[in-house]
Image (cartoon, rainbow, N blue to C red; front, side):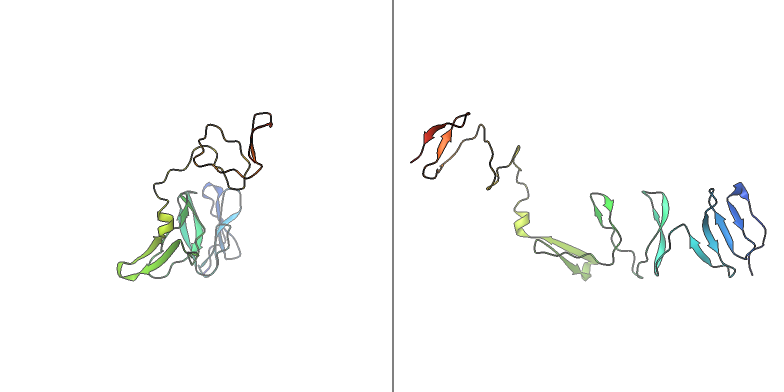
Length: 168
């Protein structure tokens, strides 16, 4: 049984057309929801969902979005970077030796282990100011050299670039 061929116009935003399909339109006249003659919803919003996607609420955008449907056990984790949700993917892959993820079925969790090399950096203070690189040319001020070594024929220059102290 199709929808009646009359027009529903509460606030002028909904209608059912004469073709037997019901369309609910947004205020600008664009069809937002389509119901076919069998009573099936065939369109919601302007996106076209892929097979297996479900409607989910996006609180940040205050709207409904299509997202991959979860399996029977729940929806899993929401992966974020800096508090911003990333695209919902089937897999989360740890590729490397410093972060290792393992399944802990007994506790119904995923354990992520940080390598000892990364853990050794924990609690260390980063230097302030510019960091001197091994291949960079930089001017150092107010520094104390402990056990300095200079190559043959090197020199320490004054502000104008003239040699103040020559090494043979």
